[in-house]
Length: 468
Image 1 (cartoon, helix red, strand yellow):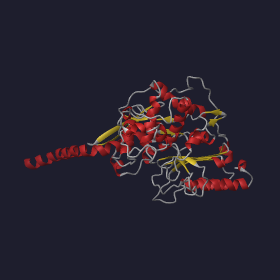
Image 2: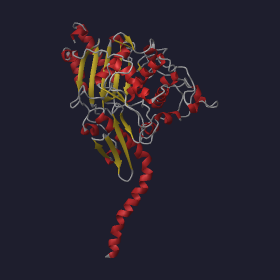
Image 3: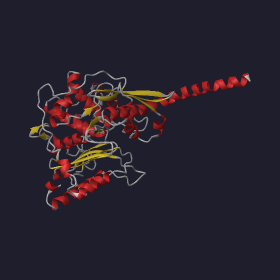
Image 4: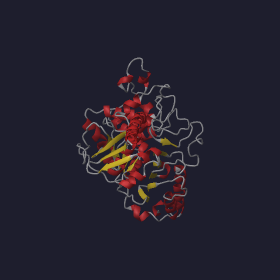
């Protein structure tokens, strides 16, 4: 009897020993995954203004997520994600800076009001009241937008959350999924890269950054380091030659950079040079985080740095909801971490549609938008400019492009899970689509843009766009 009792007592001890040993092997994969869950849930609840159930429901359907315990402290505004005996990660919300994985450097929050230089607020730039009276006047456009919220394939969920369409400065269509609305902030993921483009342009106009400067990182300045030849232009056009692995497996370099690194730019900058700068195109979030660190280095204080996006861009074009989130070191994660309302994402698109001006005031330097939508020399289909995707096509054959049936002048910001701000200058059009689409086959931006353009053209034929 005693012997049997001893064996039974030892079983929990054996399980604990096995779990502890297994936890050490599992941690490299678990830490980034738990970091992802803690950060994303924290941001969606405390920045995006969604419910706990909404935030958890929008997580990717990955096996590891089913093992995770998520604790949300609404008073302290901290989210913890853990797997017992393996690992635990926490993310904390700070006013004006969103959510950051802990431990994090303490930084001041951006000013809540106007910038210190006294720049007055501008009008919104969008006829917001037009949304209620415009929607419904084009039955075809209504049908196109309504269809975007349907789920025709249960195996490939669209999960559209918001659509805003602006034509000639008027909101002609606006719709939200149940439980979401104009006050929700939505993550942009890699659309944040295009916002970084705008901030870089402003700093270039201020002579704080230079497109052709080399020696961008201290560790690249050694005489024998070929990375010293990389320029800001190379980074903006995704032609740096760095061999960063843009994969999002549990232990992939991009996942670790975003969800397990204290300093995302330092991880990115450690990449080896595999091509001569400017000769090979390779989309990489790492390059944008290096750009973000360059932006930070151009300021003498953290206070100036964290206030800059609002002072120089967001407040000036009415993007009062915009929140850029930093990594634990305090540098904005320019590749991926920005939230804004659907209407504010539309305002950002309008800034580029209007050649960088807002209500007659120049925000971006003259020629910056043209530079941004000029295809990178190394981009094989002319599909990328300076942190913007393009439909320009090959230099020798413009019919070879992403969407041959759509206007060549389309350019767009694109983010993970189907975030888009698309600009069509030839139609004076901005289209915003936000969602949580994990299946690449479930949502096709080109198809949607084609349907929107067809609907607008039909409305024009029936009496002009002002009748929408």
